[in-house]
Length: 73
Figure 1 (cartoon, rainbow, N blue to C red):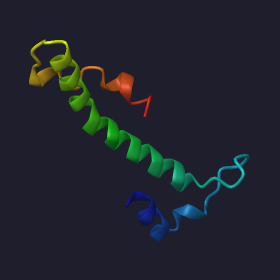
Figure 2 (cartoon, one colour):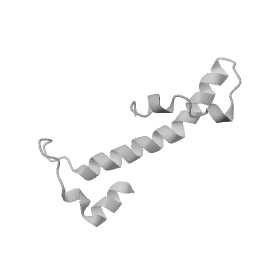
Figure 3 (cartoon, rainbow, N blue to C red):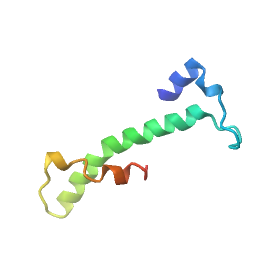
Figure 4 (tube, rainbow, N blue to C red):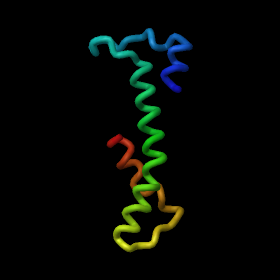
C-alpha cells in the first residue's frame, strides 16, 4: 500500500545514486513494512518465550526488546 501510494504521487521516480537504480520509494516502503512487522511480532515473541520458559507475562512488558528486534527485520 505504501509503495502504491508513493507511485501515485510520483515519488518512485527518484533513484538513489550509486545503487544501480534503486528507488527511494522502495526503501521507504521496505522500512514501513519491517516496522509494522516488528510492532506485530514483538508481543507475540515475548508471550511465546515467557510461555516456553514457564514464566508469567505482563501486558506492560510486551514491547520489551522491541528496539533489539526492529533493526533485525
